[in-house]
Image 1 (tube, rainbow over the protein chains, first blue to last red):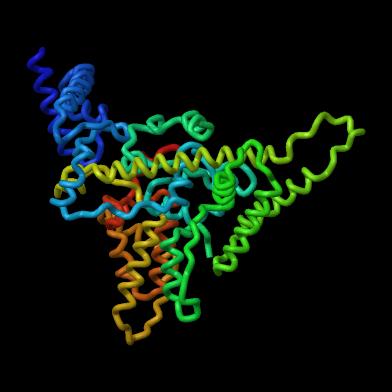
Image 2 (cartoon, each protein chain N blue to C red; image 1 turned 180 degrees about the vertical axis):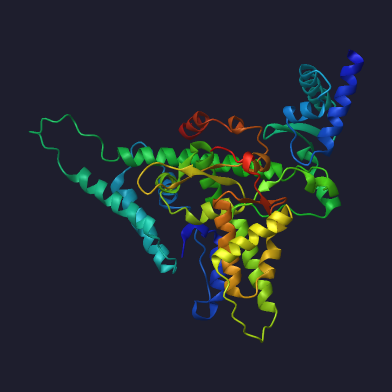
Length: 179
Length: 261
């Protein structure tokens, strides 16, 4: 039993390493179909805990509902020196503001976003759509049937979020703004 | 001009291009994301409470700022003017004495709605900053390099934007080929639809770029583009892309796999 668990953890570690996108527990369970499902779940959580306790250069994080192996942020300088890469251009603040509104108020229409920001938001919506950070989520059943937008899986990946509840809550901002 | 992209750098770049007609010096204005942002800035600068805005003073400052923006040759967007009008309206409302004979209960503070909007906006401004720092943090995180097998993994649906980009790329390439012969082939939409359907019955997927290349004229390319959109709408095919900005493939939809929604 313990031997089985140890091997299972090793296999899962290998799978997380080769996955090019965060790999979810159901995906892992599907690959390891000949193992007990509960055991796989236990193995995953033990592996993540043990792996991250090592404080090595790598870490396993829960991103967009899946597990992802990545370097620790504190080593970015040395890694960049080796890769000879520079940080890519960040989103303009106007787009980030629009993204924040979509993230917290989704699904939300363009007129609603503009009402909240007090400013035309057409071009930032376009930027966000092009970058795949937001996706259309159907139409609102009101006059004009405007398109509703929500955040995408890529949004979670790019901002390193396990899921939407991983974002700080709006109440936190209320305190921040009041204080 | 949209004020959306009014980062200082952007403005500077723009003026750089039209320098000849511009004065030799340039004052940089802080970029505001919109009228609410400007108003918050003024409230902070004047060190007044957001719950008790001295409307007359702030309105004056706000209007001065708009004048300054105009002097700087920055287009003042209509959104800024709307808020200016709101401020003046509130100011006038506050100057009017309350009707003592009125039996309606004490009226709400005319500033109330504006304050609520500012507070709400402020929260999202803070949220944007959190996203900004998260993005910064995530930029320092690296995953393993790409493997040749990565393309085998689940596809992402291509969006109408991606399709349009592919279309534009094909048009660009076409421009490079000098065409002397002008032969107008009159392919109809119906024929194009049949053509694509036929292609997809012999192979399970076609590259969209290839379809565009196959087209004999610009007109046929446009018909191809529209035909693809039509076939997606009919759920006859779906467009997938393995990586962002990557090649787009048209895949035949297996009828019994069409989701009900």
